[in-house]
Length: 292
Image (cartoon, rainbow, N blue to C red; front, side):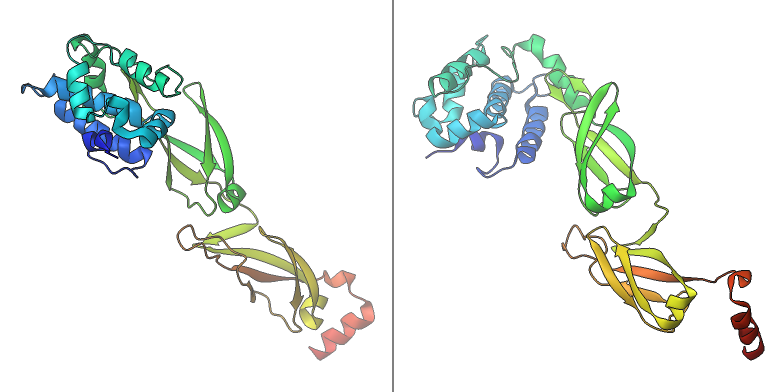
């Protein structure tokens, strides 16, 4: 089965939506009639846009992947476009008729119009400038560790993004088609994420550090204590003669590395809380004072 639609954009049949968009933008810049004055550039530009109209629409792309060039009467898409997209032909009407006959909705999601010279200005504006916009957001520490949905507003528009678990402060996320518009194209929103500090935890790479307060009795004689972590609550044993500042390692209770999917560790930094001298039994206090 011929894949001439993909050949038009110079991509493989397994291309992602991002790869399709990237190939389209590159070719549209190259063959834009206001830039490329060579004979045939305008026809090529129409062909590129029509191919993108199909492959960027999930429903149309599935239909084309199923039926191939039989949708164009067995011709390659190049030959079909040259025969049908000339003059002031309305590409949307032609594509809607084809894909409507193959079980599609019969409606174009983009509405490119007839591609006469009056329509080229919007594309030129889009390709001549960067339509992506930048934004900065602050997210809670716990959200960066566990991941989840986050919603905020920019320029009056609500944006909902997915925060991946283990995100680092300063990393950038991309919200597709949330940037500036020009003609029929809209750029992306590039989001720089700042992670708020947490009073309980400090982060060092994939490891977490947390202060653990214990009383003097526990430090001297040992005991079991319950610890809350981002994964689950755990019970740990404090050994006798635990010193102030000593670190206790909880292996695998840190932050999930986004590349390796391996969790870092959590380190509990012991902080021994000494009792007020006035709260100690007088006899014990006198004995401590005489023997220390």
